[in-house]
Length: 147
Image (tube, rainbow, N blue to C red; front, side, top):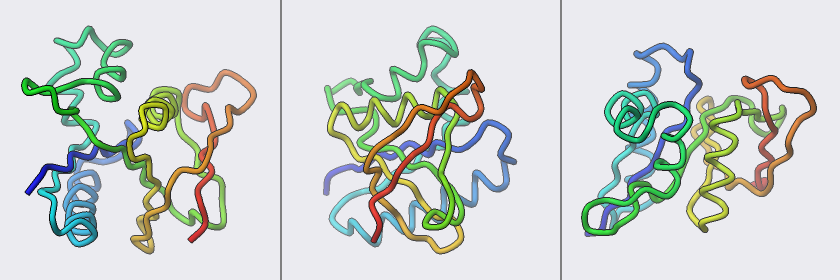
């Protein structure tokens, strides 16, 4: 059984309890979808606390999420999931670090998904648009493939 390690790209202000619930729910969903894989979902909060200092801080850490490797050369993460609500009815947005990480995962040919936490549907990221302005909290829009 091979590993499937997924990065949960939640907002920084998301309460810890919600992050923990999301991590557990998403692990169950992906374990069902990939029964031949050993699924591990790592919350951004947890990865940041554990590895950001050694990675070089806030500015350098996102790149290690995207392209970092484990001791055996395997990718640190195989994919990224952005939680959202009402995915098919509204724009899914992301702050600059999350937006840039999702771009990086796509550029490296890794999984990039948006998860509708209301319906538990998972959508592939089809494309991304940079939004005007300099708001680090609403840096870009994520366009998903409709199911």
